[in-house]
Image 1 (cartoon, one colour):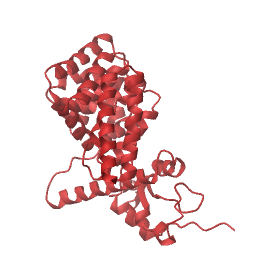
Image 2 (cartoon, one colour):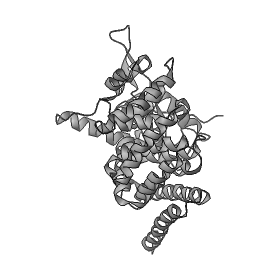
Image 3 (cartoon, one colour):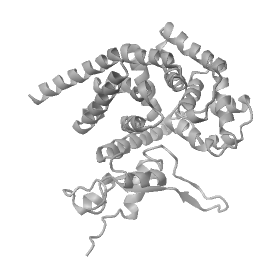
Image 4 (cartoon, one colour):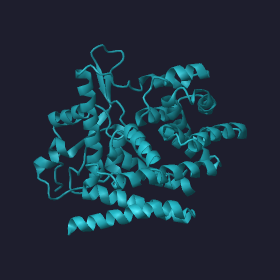
Length: 365
C-alpha cells in the first residue's frame, strides 16, 4: 500500500505564496495577475514546492520530520511552474539548504518591498514593459525601454526570456552593444544591464573587431584609472569580451576584483543587489560552473565573489552547510585557476581558504 503524500492544504499554500509576494523564489518572476477577457478573473502561475519531499521516495526526503512539519509553510517554497518542476526533479541542483536560502531571501525582499510602500519610498519598478522588447526597432526605442529598469537578475533574466520571441534577436543584441559606448559615462545602470545582456546572450552576439576594440577600451580605461565604482558595467562586459576572444581584458578585470579590496567589495555589493539574496547568488555560481559556454578563466569568473563571501561575517554564510558549499565552490575555482596557469589568482583564493580552515579549527576548539 502506497503511503499518502503529506501535501500542503490550501491555506498553507496561500501563506507560502503571500510570504513570497507571489514571486518565484528562484527567478523573481511574478506569478499572479489578471485574467484577460474576464474582469473578475485572476491567473496564478506558481506552485508551492516542498523543500523536503512530501513522500518517502521524493527529493530531499527527511525521515526525521513529522507529518505536520512536512505539511507546514516552513517546509514550502514558492516558485514559478518552471522552477517548481526543476526543484522536484533536480535534487543535485537544489539541495534543501539551497532552497531554504532562496526562500528566506525572497521573503526578506517581499518584506522590504512592503515596508518601502508603507513608508512612501519608491521601489524600483518591475520588468513588465520588457514584453515590448521583441518589437524594438532602433536604439532610441531600446534606450526608452531599458533606461528605467532596475539592474537586477529579474531584469536581465526577463530580457533573455523575452528575447526569444523576437523575429531578429541578434539585431536587438547588436543594438545594445552599439549603444554601450554612447551611454557608458552618463547611464551607469543602463550600462550594467546592456553589458550583462551581452554576457548572457553570447551566442546571439556577433561583434565586429572594431566594436570589440572600442568596448575593450572602455574597460581598460576604468581599470587604468582604478574606477572601481564602475565595476557593475565593467565586470560583465569584460566577461563578454573574454568570450569573444579578448582574454587580456577579462584577465585584467578578474585580477582587479580578486586582488583589490576596493574592486572586490564594490563587485560584491553589485552582486548582492543584483540577485537580492546570497542564496540566489550561490545557486547562480553553481549554475555558472555547469555552463558549457564557460571555459578557461571564464569558468572561474566567480572567484572574487566566493572570496568575499568566505571572508565576510554575513549571517547566512555562518551556517555550516552554506559555508561548506562556499568552500567547495572556491576550491573548484582554485583548481580551474591553476589549470589556466593563473598562479597568483589561485594563491589569493587559497590564502582565504586556509584562513577559513584555521578559523573553523579555532571555533571547534
